[in-house]
Amino acid sequence: MPLSDEKERAVLLMQEGNARWMGDLTADDRRALTAPARHGWLQQLMQEIDPDGTLPPAEVEFRARQRRREIMARISRLGVEERLRKKAERERQAAAAALGALADAMAEHEHLTA
Image (cartoon, rainbow, N blue to C red; front, side):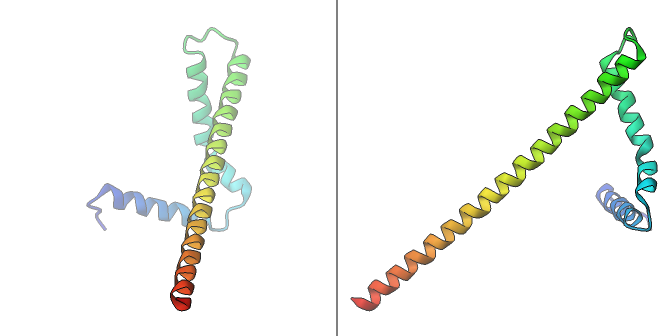
């Protein structure tokens, strides 16, 4: 089926990827499937850290792995902050709804007793 739109294509690829990932893959299979991407990212970080190639390879790799850990920790922190923000918003909305219900109940009570 020809796709007229990049968004459709992206959705189809995501569906296929999710179906593949949810199949009978073991943890080792998943790790093997993502190995090229992880290796490529590490190579990219190594290039960013030592563009001139002046540092010893072991040092470059060490720094690249540390940079990767730093990036992943930052992503994790941002996720935690977002979840906490959403939780606080849900709690704020629930409190506002409860106050609204209480105000309605008080107004109804005053109307009935007046």
